[in-house]
Length: 376
Image (cartoon, rainbow, N blue to C red; front, side, top):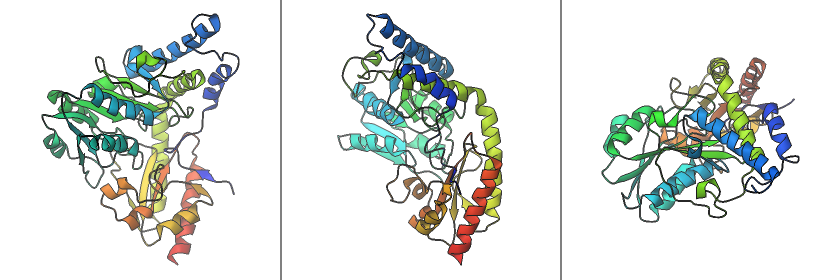
C-alpha cells in the first residue's frame, strides 16, 4: 500500500506550474544576473527583478525591501543577528517565545552567549502568549522581539497585530518567522507592525533552497554573508535565478487559491479530528480556534510514542512533532505543559493541496489499527 503523505508543514511537493516556470532558467537562460554587460545576463537580471517586484506587490512593500536568501533559516539569522549588530548601541535585551522554531531560538541564544540578555516567554496551554505578560516583559532596553506568525508544529496563530502595536509604541523592532503563514493567509508585514519578516519557498509548493527577508522601510541590518555585494550588499552570492522564479510563481499560485484551500483543508482537518476522537484517548495540542486550517496536532493516550510512530510510518508520512527535531522531545509541546511521554505520543498531521477525503479516512483507519495493536 502506498504511503499517504500528511506532512505538508515539513515540506510540500513542487507544483508542476512552478517546475515549468523554472525550467528555462536551468539551461536555456542560465546566465548570471550580475553579468549585465551582455544580453544573456540582462535577461536573467530581468527575471529576478520581475520576481522581486511581484513578491513585493503581494507583500505591500517596495521591491528593494525584499532580500532573497536560501530560505527562512538564513532569513531569520540575517534578521536577528543583522538587526542586533546594526543597533547594538540601542539596547541589550532580546525577547521571544518558548514555542519558536529553532531557527529563531538558536540565533538568539548565540547572541545571549555574546553579552545580550534573552527572555524566553512561556505560552499558555493553548500555545498563545498572554499579551499582558508579553507587555510586562518589554523593557526600555529591549532591542528586538521575535514572534512567529504560525507555529510549525501546532499551527497556532499568534496575535501579531496586537504584538506589533505593543512593540511599535515602545519603538522596539519586531521580527516574525513567517515560513508557515506565507501563502496560507494574506499578510502585509507593515500593516501588522512587523519590521522584519522571513519566508520560505518549499512550504508553499515552491522549490527548496530559496526564501526571502522582507524589511520595513528604513530598517537597516548588517550583512551576515559577505561576498559580491548582491542584494544591496546584504547577502553576497550569485543569485539562483530558477529558484527565485519558482518562489515567485509558487507565491502567485498560493495567493490565488489560499482561501479555497484553507477552507477545503479545514473541512478535511475537522473530518480527521472527528475520526480520531472516536478512537478515544485523543486530545488536541494547542488552540483549535486560532490555527491554520491544514494543521492538526494530537496526543494519544495509552501508547508508547516510539511504538506508535513505528506502526504509523509503514502507511502514513506524519511527524511526531518538529520536523527539525533530532529525537529529543518537542520543545513546543513541552512549552504547552506536555510530559516527554505525552509529547512522544503526539502526531502532527499537515494537510496539503493533494490531500483527499479518501486519504483522510485511510489515515483514521491506519491510526485505529495501530492503537488496536498497541493498546491490546
